[in-house]
Image (cartoon, rainbow, N blue to C red; front, top):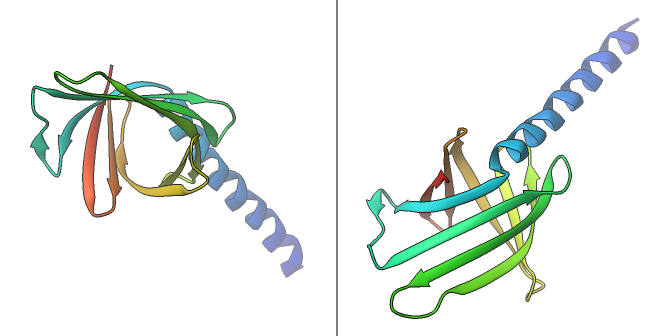
Length: 125
């Protein structure tokens, strides 16, 4: 009898964890502008915009445009995979290496990521 109770409970937990990634991916879909690094506003000569395009329930592609005035903008593209709603793994299209960032918090308008000890806060455009 215990087997029959454990199996449905396990299936429910599995489905609940899948939905976290899907919910976050739907929220992330779109264009985000960097506002702060470690709590300090970015300089007026620096802009960074990341565009996430969801492909599946827990993955998609991204493009990052970074501008440091007066230099020309630089664009990076790649793919990403979400691990529940706690981590995002990005893989640059020009490299075989991937980077993992912790998702500190998110809402419909704000996304806060922690990478290599630094915290980046983005707002949705």
